[in-house]
Image (cartoon, rainbow, N blue to C red; front, side):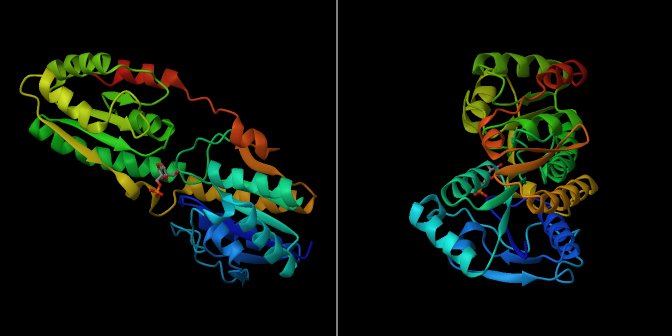
Length: 323
Ligand code: F6P
């Protein structure tokens, strides 16, 4: 192997730069040149490649976002788009591709390997932490810290004004980010899609907590299916007398910021391992870490198997967070 390419795709996540840095420098050690592709799969289609030297990635370990930019590519979803991408990889003499991204990006990677028999290794990068085959994905730890910092601040004003706050947390269809940040911030109620709550049940719980505490923090994962944020807020207002409800949508602040040490370490290990694995000849795989052991699993499993969420954390939180 002489040349490999790396791209970041889908929603960015803090730690992507630390991972690119590890890839470039580990590859350099093996005398492999790394080509950074700009704007994810779109850059692959548009031949937007630039060589990254070990010095180009200096002073990036602590920077959020991605120096390679990211995109959600519609064209790569088409066979025509993927053909163009393959042609560009061949014409740049690239022997392997490393894809940093979440489930959509890893799905694209798998389709690409199977169509063109190209060497591809995926690295799980998403604040949602919903990828099977790794305890944590790159970016989750930082996002969790961001959410907890925000809720700590909201708690001050919620308490001063005796208000009920509904805080919406990202995570797409899953509640990993909401659950762990809810536990860490002592939220009185954590609502996640994996728990099939009914609106009536939820209102009953909030009423009970509010009668006792007067100020309530409800962490609401964006993927919850039992009702919209507005429906919930209106229901609370209509069913709990004199309730003072506010909604706070944390939004994209959760995707930015200085990566936490945990994310930097995870990113460094997975970047380094991706180079080891691709040079050993592996393809169609994702690298991850489970119980401190580096794992290599099929991309198929990473995208199709369901990662279990620890619902006992929610049960525990209900017991310890309502005094
Ligand atoms: O997958 C990461 C994520 O931040 C989700 O939590 C969220 O639902 C989505 O991306 C938002 O995407 P966009 O930035 O395209 O609005």
